[in-house]
Length: 156
Image (cartoon, rainbow, N blue to C red; front, top):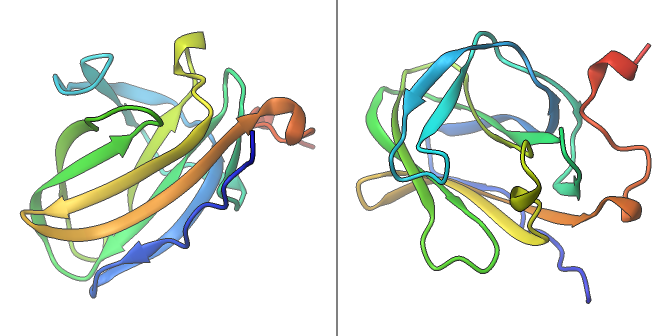
């Protein structure tokens, strides 16, 4: 299987990428219903995560967390957040507010074996018909990315 190169991240005017890659997962402060996702909810993080690998190639391994932090220059209420998984004809969707000059995290964590799907994952946000950003991640067999982990307890 040939591995694809992930597309360069794209953002609309007024949207800035703060971080992209693999991060240390901070504590969760609970969940929020997200009925259009596979789990039916999203985790709410207590703080912004620490990004430890700034890359778009992601190892398919349990415990890996990857995503993006973006910042808007104006308030966007009820932005539609989409996660496109390889081979799926519909994204997972939830809605959230983006507030001006406030970094916001969008990510995914491999918590269950059935989530380890190889191929191109795409995270997007939309304000109506306007795409705010799009980031691709290439999820590869963990053996092709040795030493890459998001277990920050192993870091000195």
